[in-house]
Length: 155
Image 1 (cartoon, rainbow, N blue to C red):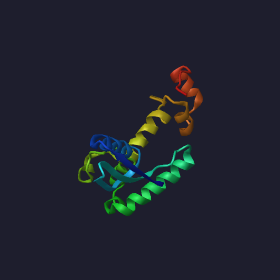
Image 2 (image 1 turned 60 degrees about the horizontal axis):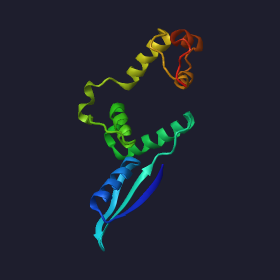
Image 3 (image 1 turned 90 degrees about the vertical axis):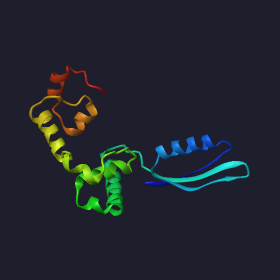
Image 4 (image 1 turned 45 degrees about the vertical axis):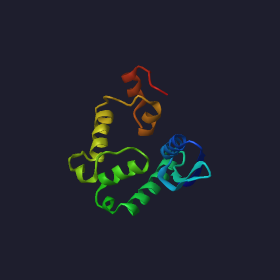
C-alpha cells in the first residue's frame, strides 16, 4: 500500500469538508493530520493509504496478505477469530461494516458459505456464475456453462 497525502485549502468551510469526505472515501486508514483556519482560508492536511490496483490473482494475494498482516498487527482479537479478522479486513478496505466483533457468534463461517456455493455450482451444476471471468477463475466446466446459460454469459 502507498501512503497518499492531500492538502485542502478553501475559503468555504462546507467545500473543505466535502473535499475531505471525498478524499476519505478514496483511501484506507484515513487521517486528518491538521485542520485550521488561517488567513481567511480553511486548511486541512490529510493522509491515508491507497490500495494498489488489483489486476490479477497474484496481485490480489499479495495485497490481501499485506492487509491481513496490518489488521492482525493492529487488532489483537483478530488473531483468534477468522470471522472478526474478515470483518476487520473489510473495514480496512473501506467498507462500512456494522456488525461488531462481539456479535459475530451467530454469523455463518465464510468458509462454510463458500464451500456450500462450490457444492451447489460445481457438484450440482446449478446457479452458475454469470461472468466468464469468474467461471474461468473457478475452473467451471465450459460445456456446463453453455448448457446452463445458452451461451449468454457476461464478459
